Image 1 (tube, rainbow, N blue to C red):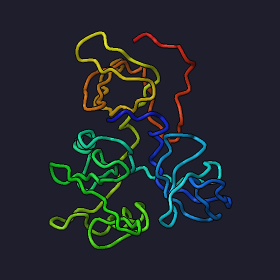
Image 2 (spheres, one colour; image 1 turned 180 degrees about the horizontal axis):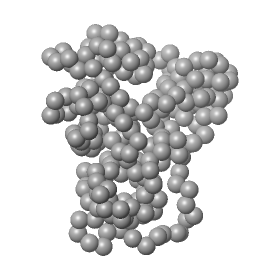
Image 3 (spheres, rainbow, N blue to C red; image 1 turned 90 degrees about the vertical axis):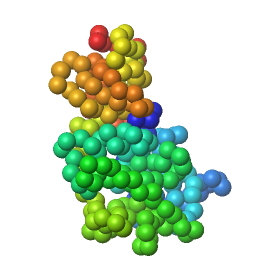
Image 4 (cartoon, rainbow, N blue to C red; image 1 turned 180 degrees about the vertical axis):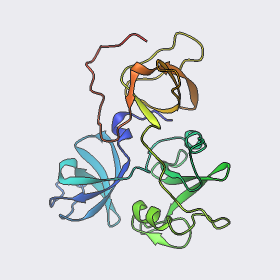
Length: 241
């Protein structure tokens, strides 16, 4: 997986509901009214100000004026390769999917879907009005597009209906930096989100990060939680592997 810091990791939320009116105070801010549905484009830069879109206009909004809507299918900056690793696991069925940011086109999205023994990838397109679509039917948000394709195929050549993938134990998040001492170990930094592959050994788990695969000490990580904005560990503390 790409270098997902904790703030990027909680990007599983694609939309927000405005809980208060907000009047922009500068040209790069975005005005909105209570009850508006905003598309959240970026939460990475500042925990207090998110980049969002409303009716084709983009700008920054105060995070404490909105309520985020959960989208467990959105995994942010996961690579195409790591998406395939997840979706090819034995317990994954046809139609299980995730939405990710395009590696080659920042700000755009792709849907990765398990079908038979492979993973198919569909780029989400946008028209001049900001509408999202795969084929002919267009939507105001990714949420609406996903909901539609739960009952209408994402493919024109096969019937592939989207269904939710269990998200509970697919990822772990690094509590500390880990520098390998042996060949076959996986290096990572505090805050990285790691694709979990195998945890048969209680002390050393196997995972993948940035297309690298290896083992790592299980006490260096915690279950990934999209709601956590940082890892709550005292700076400078590191456990023994």
